[in-house]
Length: 287
Ligand code: SF4
Ligand code: SF4
Ligand code: SF4
Image 1 (tube, rainbow, N blue to C red):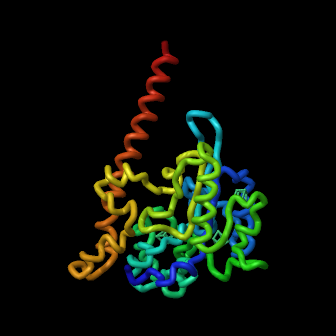
Image 2: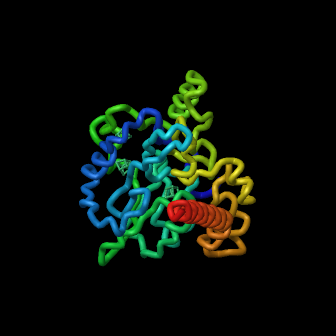
Image 3: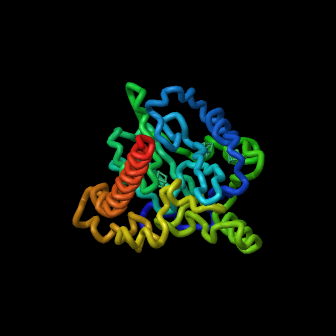
């Protein structure tokens, strides 16, 4: 077990998002913005495609099922890993896994090196590019977010209970029950149960959502030649190298390099396919 993991797993809190229940109303985003007093995110230049930014800790990503043509909404934010790479890579210990499950971030300690951004396998932490004194920001899931009832503001705001908050143990039971009781409705997988050593935020869905969340399938992990990461965290994978590499960031980077290369290859293939399709279309249009 790596030093960032908590010893009592029954106390870990987390969230479960059921994509089939999400109506894309974005009340969770509004709840988060209000609770965390986040400014308006009008500078779209600084916004990534997934909607997360230094001012947005959670977003709703729209994804289309190409077979049915139906759109699905996937809530995105920090997955609060059980053994977080961001915490291992941070030189000054600004990230830490709290005993109740949240991966906390101390702005006061941050030196702005952005190693956490490179180390996160899900590309979650964002930089405040628009500020003269920028920090890295991400979803907190800690006491600061909790409203009456002890739940995070984003969860309380959700009108359909698409996103719920409980102990990780209970959430796993709920997720397994829904999969068992509704055969054929869901993809038979709990996203975040095991990947990268498991996460406190998990998902169930009626369509594959690994691409949206940057959670590879077992086959994709094998293709990256990193099958261990289907169950093991990056810090646990690189632990034997750390004595050779005194700065943990380099060890984490080495562990993740296969993932970066794989994603780059996939992105280039997608771009090529899009270019081929559009030039084929232009060719047909010119006939
Ligand atoms: S999802 Fe990324 S930022 Fe969040 S805890 Fe895991 S490694 Fe850290
Ligand atoms: S847990 Fe807190 S920071 Fe994260 S999305 Fe919810 S309200 Fe925002
Ligand atoms: S509030 Fe609930 S239903 Fe609305 S977008 Fe967020 S998760 Fe989906």
